[in-house]
Amino acid sequence: MTATAPPRALVPRQAPGALPFLGHGLAMQRRRLDLLERVQGLDRGGLVALRLGARRMLMATDHRLVRELLVRQADDFGPSPQYRLMEPVTGGGLLLSKGAFHRRQRRLIRPAFRHSRVRHYADLMTELSRAWADGLRDGGTVAVDEEFGNLATAIVVRSLFGRGVTEREAASVVEAMTDVMAWVGARGSDPLPFLAKLPTRVNRRFARGARTLHTLVDTVIAHRHELVADAPDDVLTWLLETTDAETGERMSDRQVHDEVMTLLTAGAETTSRSLSWCLYLLARHPEAEERLHAEVDSVLAGRAAGFDDLPNLPYTRRVLTETLRLYPSGYLLSRTSVRATALGPYPLPAGTTVLFSPYALHRDPRLFPAPDRFLPDRWLPDRATEVTPAAFLPFGLGQHGCLGEGFAWTEMTIALATLAGRWRLRPVSPGPVTPTPLFSLSCGRLAMRVERREAGGDAGHGTS
Image 1 (tube, rainbow, N blue to C red):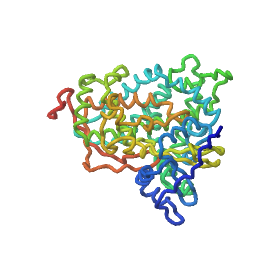
Image 2: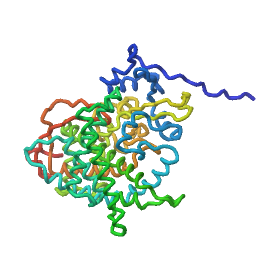
Image 3: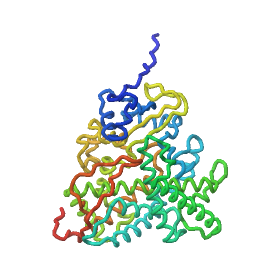
Image 4: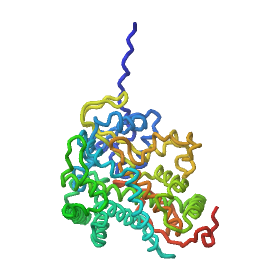
C-alpha cells in the first residue's frame, strides 16, 4: 500500500517593487490602495510577502486563506500591531482581547445585539434620523462625513446609555470622538511611532478627547449602579447585569468600561464612513438614485423609516451592500500569529503578521466581475454568479467579526431611507473623490448641497 505524501510546504511569493532599505514602505505610505490592488492581482497569489522597512509581513490574497485565518485557525492568531494603537482608547475590550477571554466576552455581549434588541434600538435610530433630516435646509451645504459622524455617534450613545447622558454630554462625546478618530487616522498611516508622543495639535486634542470619553463612561457606570431597579433598558445595563452562565460571574466595571469604549468607537466610525460613500455614489449614478427614491416613496410616503420597513426596502439594502463592496470602512485588516502554525500550505512562525484587504478582495475581477462599476443589482438572488459571497467581508468574519453587524445594517438602512425620502444631496465639487486610507477608508470633507424633494414627485426630477 502506497502512503500519500503530505502536501508540499510553500514559501510566500515576494511582492515586486521593493526599494532598497524601504521595501514597500514608501508605496504603503503614499499609494496604499494601489499597492494593495497590485498585490491582490498577482497571478500566483495565496500568501505574498511585503517588506515595510525592516518588518516583513504577509498578505493573504486568496479569500479561502482569509476565511481560514479568521475561522478555522482563529485561535492561532491575535491582534496585530495595527490594532495596538487603539489600546489607549479601547483598553482590553473585544478589539484587543484574545483566546478564551475573548470568546467569553463575545458570549456575554452577543445577546445585547440579537434581533429583538436591534428592534428596540431601531426606535432610537428612527427618532434621531428623523430629527437629523428635519434639521437640513433646502439649498444649504453640509459636510456629509461630519453630519453622518454626528448622527452615528448620537445613535450609538443613546443605544449604549439610553437617556443616562444629558444633551450637553452627548455633544461632548461627538466632539471627543472627532478628535480621537482624527488621531487614530493619523497614527494608522504613521510609520514613526514616536511621533505620537510629540505635543502636536492632533496629539493634544486626542489626549483631551480620550480623557473626556473615559471620564464620561466611568461617571455613567457609577451612576447606573445607583439606579438599581430603575436602570434604563440599554446596552450599558445589559453589560453590567449579564452573568456568565459557566462561572456565575459578571464583568468588572473596568471591563464594562473597555467594552463600552470599543463599541463607541467601532459603532460610529463604520456607519458614518459607509453612509458618506453611499451618498457620493448615488450622486454619481442618477439611475440608481432614482430607483432608490422610487422605492422609499412607495414604502414610506415621506415618513421616517422604521424597523418593520426593512423587508420592504430591498433596493436600499442592495445600494448599501454595493457601497460596502466598493468602499469597506475596514479596508486593511491584520492578525499576528501567537504560535507557530500554518495557513493553507504555508508554514508560519510565531509573530508573523498576516494582512488582508477587503478593499482589494472586493475589487478583484476574478471574484466580482466589472469590479469598479457601481451595480447594486449584482446582489439580486438570481444573479449569484456575479459575486463571490465568501469574499465579501465588510464586517470581518468569525470570532473577530463585528458583533454589531445587524445593528449597523439596520442603522444605515433607516438613516439612508429617511434621508432619501425627503432630500437629494449633490457634491459641491462634481469631480471624483479619491479615498484616503487612514485607519478606515475616508472620503475626506465631502461637501454636498441639499435639495428638497417631494415623495413621488422629486420637484422637477422624474423618478422611475
